[in-house]
Image 1 (tube, one colour):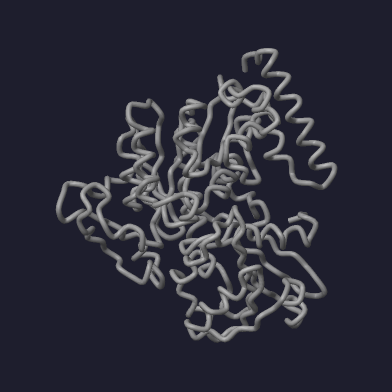
Image 2: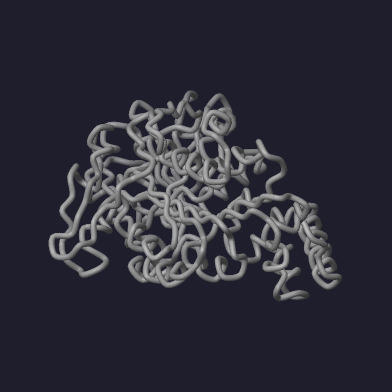
Length: 424
């Protein structure tokens, strides 16, 4: 790493001090405020901190934080890796992450989909991992086709090496202008946002039809070929292929993804992570053992104990995320659902009507969160009996000791983590 200019060094140091004070006073984890302070003193700080590093950017609607963690874990085989482990995925968070580990030769940064063109331009990252695009925070991020279009424009003419999920038509369209792409058939469980061709607007012919992918077998999930009826846009031939618990690399070798993170979505994340790691010269045989050490990600999938109850925490921020959470949740267990609609969540909760909650019939369901009445109405229409609770604590107290699953959207999830002292 080359020496930072004096102004950048000062900005970086003051940012780290602000982050430390934020943590010490309990006002936050410092992952945003440190970057804001640094950028106030040196607006070009992100560019300077990113220089001379091997940098990976990770973007998607769902799975960014987990995939970032998996890639980081793999690359630690080479040495120190700077990363925004807690999901602060806008420029201020990126500055904090790089400044906190200024000598790390590698960096892996989760990037908000909307900010990806800006961050790519600023950091000149060499590798970009693109996984999925689906409706999310429409009041903030706008229509997802517009996001995919922004990706296309940002990648056109750039030498960046893109690792992209070719099973998602929107991701494929967004990545197809890049000079070099490694295609990964990582699956697409949620398909309700990609029935039309993003190139011409015509219908896409797809195999493995289902209700948003719900109820598909592993073999059907692997069969995700698609093509437009009216133009030449179609699924590229994949270099990596995920099939159930196995991923096949470009040489035809099969690798079992016996990771500790649950669900098919996390095996897809692991497949993407392996492809990225190999792009940087790390063989899957060396990367896989490191992926297996990851047991939770910023509280996700963690089990916490309270008064004889074991609560497993699952995050779901949008319809695609809820579908994946249902895949992981144990149908034999009671379940607590918590929904807010603060700024980071998106103020509009109409997306609840895109989630098929009928899968919850037959189990005890408790509903809490700031927008619990919105969720209660949705469950009523779906014919799912539930119990309305004023607080998460009340919901936990109403259930007998034993195992409980908890699904919450972003700020509700963070509030629940705070109740446990963010030790999860």
